[in-house]
Length: 57
Image (cartoon, one colour):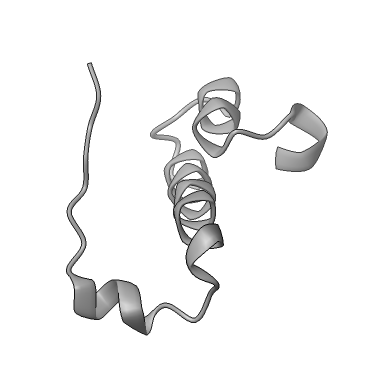
């Protein structure tokens, strides 16, 4: 099972990051937000962010 979030082109163009970094940065931001609200465990947040425990910590 996977999940896709559709983001309009105008919003994507407004993000002030190089295009090749947008997906990873959004994954990290989502992982941090869910973890900080106790909606995702540390391990699963790390998995979502594609980071090791030291990077995520």
